[in-house]
Length: 89
Image (cartoon, rainbow, N blue to C red; front, side, top):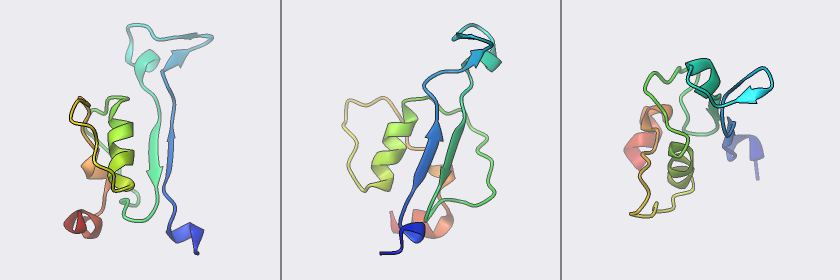
């Protein structure tokens, strides 16, 4: 199996921070990295819409071809996927 062409990697964090504290009212304290790479993921694409942390799990469910639970409030980050992948799913 060619792992490089069959693996999706997500890089994120559970909360933002500033210095040794975390959380807080400013965007620098709330924003977290949200990086995804793999087959079907747009290359050199900056996601401009707001992503909530719980959108990660729903996006991962889409990648794994698993139906997210109907009680999840999240939305998959579909703009992360390239057009070829999107037409298949």
